Length: 67
Image (cartoon, rainbow, N blue to C red; front, side, top):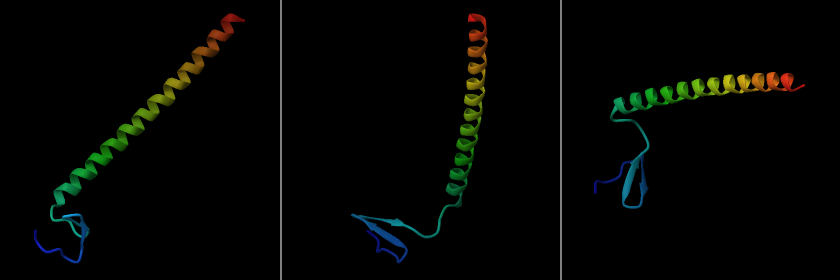
């Protein structure tokens, strides 16, 4: 195996590079993926809040009809 550099961390028989990124495309893909998952989470949260509000409204209508 190649000699470790100062910015490498030894993990068993392999090394993990801690400084710098040789491939900027990987960082862009990770960023786009994180943004996509964040937007998806926000959209699902809004849908959940709307469905909870609708459920509360339907339950209140049902309770008014029962009385």
